[in-house]
Length: 236
Image (cartoon, rainbow, N blue to C red; front, side, top):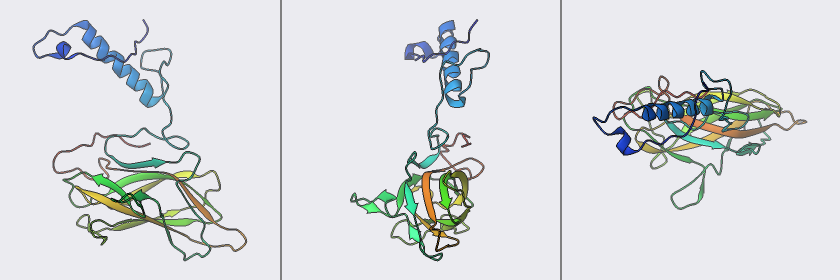
């Protein structure tokens, strides 16, 4: 017998309290779980010999679907979201059009909401896909909320995190970024800065950022004190 996979919607009348459990309800739930399994894992449902529903990438060169606990995800496909070509090793550049302010103007800050209830030692977890040609780079995530002054998002008062980006060539690669500071229960304002770690006057370095995702992840962000909205999904 083949494993059945289908989108089955249960009517309210089918799941009312004290109603008898009938076969079609259980079958519908099983069909939906098999379908979700194939879409999420891009693999044949357990017990079946063939895959009916095909999963697909949600980001550059692979990537998980948006998940619960996600704060900010942006992907440019083959086109970079941000490209930076410095002329000096000490030159620092901010991502200029990272977001839009309250008046609809381009801003150097990304705006996203973070869940309330988090306590000390809580940070966002994330991934970026980038390419670094002719030089390694450093990228800095700086949280600036309210009047633009740096907040102390937790007991450690971390307001900025800097990560090293090794040279990749044109192909590029994914890089885990943790910890990224945030302010719980508020609209966050994140600025991203980058600089080259070395300069060769005969070979101009270029940094391209193709994809970014920041999330509240159990075991990494820290559990909120109340109203949790995290479900254990992990980006791989």
